[in-house]
Length: 523
Image (cartoon, rainbow, N blue to C red; front, side, top):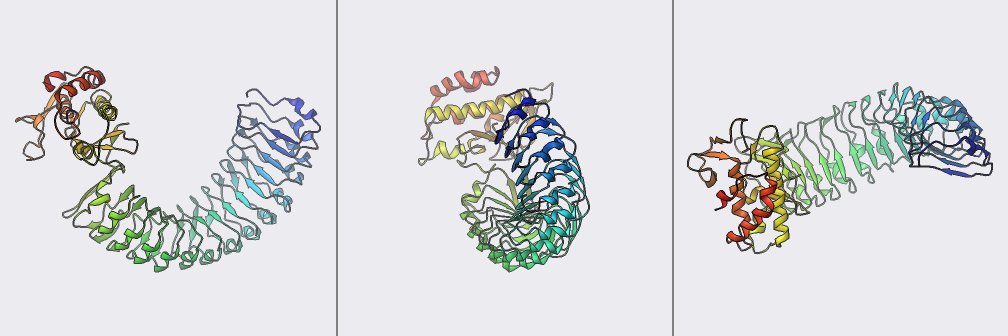
């Protein structure tokens, strides 16, 4: 629906609900709409309405719910809104409103239950009058430009379940009065300038499920009381200056699924009690000063999908028990002091268009690793040469097209042509949808504008140099095509089907590669 909201809407004197959400309405909100004495719900969210909110909103004596989210409203929240004495929900998220939070909002002390005003340009401090909103359950003022401190009056909002003041410019410490919010389930203070210690009394908020205190300036240690919150599911204390040890009590968080303690100054060993977190999905503790070995009990984290232990002082070997983590998709242990062999099994298959790129790496005298995205179906080599895996002609054809598309991009879609140089089946990885990705292990060669071939410097790497590069180590775009020819001609039993390969190259690879001279290579 397009156009504007007609002024005549104010003549509908028996209207109870206006719902015009998720359209393309423009213009302003007619001031006459609030003359409808019977109006209880007004939903005009998800449009492109502009101009200020009419001051006549205070005339809505029976108005209970107002949804104006995701528009282009500007100006300030009118003080007259406090006259809408029946208002329970006010959602103004994602507009261009500015100015302060009106202190008159506190006049809705007995009725207002939800106040949403995130994603604005609200400035100034949070008024102490918000403490009068004793029935408020949701208070969201994230992504604004609020300054000052967290008001102690917030502790009077005893029914509060969600408090979000994230991504503002608040300073000072978290007042202990916040701990009086015993019904609080979600607390968001991310991205402010808060400092000082984290109040130990947060552990008294027994219903707390999500705690986000990341990207602030908190110091001292993490209060042990946080690990007693048996219902907490997310703890994010990243990017602060927290010191001290990881306590054994961390193992008590039996329902937690995400812990982020990265970018702090933690200096202890990782306790064995970490193995008790069997609901844990994401664990980030990178960029600290952790030391000692990686506990073998990490293998008990059966739900783990992401593990980031990078940039610490961890030593010893990677525990073999990590092989049991069947859901693990992303793991980063780079920049530690690890040594020994990389475990085999499911961990050895950790890997990520048609390209799979290296996201991180680590190298020292005893340990070398590449970090890639996880690919559920492993390498093409497994499917070509194993009796336990097979695919039909159509799947093989689609894989050839995926690889050909990747080569076409390397040769024609980039400023300088690139030759992959290692296009063998175990460097072609298959995702859950059997889409092929060409993996780049950093062996690729660049061809200059005047060159159609170049000479490799890895000629002496016995057992690694592909035969198509010849005795002189000459690398060209034809080299990669030659390599594709090898595995595309292999039957599922590992034999070589020359005629079938010619037909597949002729109908698929040749046009995709833009006329490369394939047949001399094949024949």
